[in-house]
Image 1: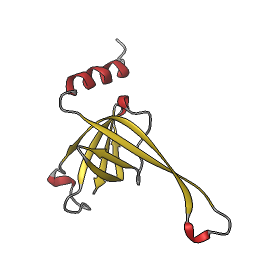
Image 2 (image 1 turned 180 degrees about the horizontal axis):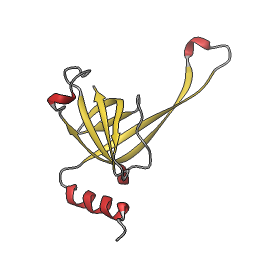
Image 3 (image 1 turned 90 degrees about the vertical axis):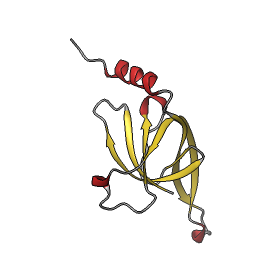
Amino acid sequence: MIFDVSTFAAEALAFFRDALRPATLTKRTYGARTPGALTDGPAITQTNYDGLGLVSEWRHEQTELVKRGDRVVILFAESFDATPAPTDTVEIEGVTYTITGVLTRDAGSATYTCAVRR
């Protein structure tokens, strides 16, 4: 029997649908600096990706380098057209968080578990 990860991800998404919240992942692309305006920094293009996710508290054993108020956001990859990365932002439940690290991506690439900070 062959295990179909995409079917499993779709079934998991359907199962957790009531617990998930709309989320917007914002990715930034840094361009070139404007000639003659070096102190302005590079041009930044932002692209939004809508999907589903949830916010969680840190478990005690995860708190080595965590500041008070840091959270974990789990993004369901099936619902996004982008991969989260540090410095991206995610808005979920009306709060915007900056991704400080992508902690894990499960073996089937169904979820991304991200460390986030307000």
